[in-house]
Image (cartoon, rainbow, N blue to C red; front, top):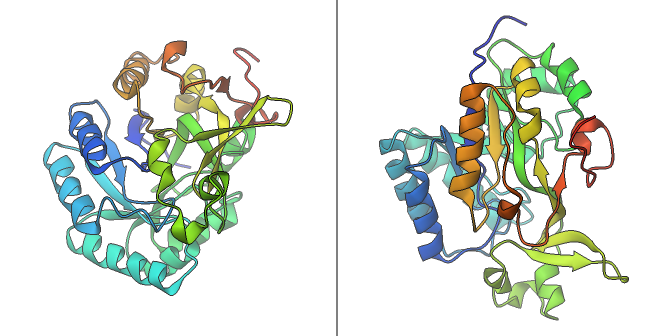
Length: 304
């Protein structure tokens, strides 16, 4: 692998939660002033969420680009209807016409994007060099390894990626573990998915799920199952830079995001570990970095 730029960039992941339009716009207006380089926009979790229309996302994308951010429009992760497929094609067509790159979050989007540069999202399951090379042939210029990939496995993949391929690693936030055709938030309220009353809007950081003996276990976000713990790879920032990771992805949350970004920005500038204050963790969440260390994902080890 040839030498690559080692200055870490920061990105904001696409918003996983269902916020009001006012809260959503307010968040991204604030983000225009944050030291993030890349902002991902779009609905990635549930096709029933329509507070932000495609026109709204594209208008916001233009404003963020004018503010100096690289903007990427993200596709839905689970496409399970013809309407979803058509919406995905509209997003690709209109975003591409406006000069925005697309993050493909399922392989139907990859197929639709052949011939265009795109970002291979975290749910495409890129575990080995063969898949990565194939995606590069199709137009991928950046990829996210699976959340459960350990640093040792990533280091091996880094040695085999093409010189033009960027690597982006989630470094902060709850992890998206699974998606289902069933809406767990609706089920929690004894509602059907098709008549969910958009209850997700009541949970700006998801709904905590505990075991029968009352131990926090997972986080529910509509059809998405998240980790209850908050991934924090801030302490591992120097080794990610040494591995030539290009971009650190930060998952948006409803509180404290500007301070979290500031912590990672200060660390990448100084080349030191990022120290995010415990008060900035999502409510009731603990830190986790187990997957990075080839351990159960919910575990946390300050030092190896």
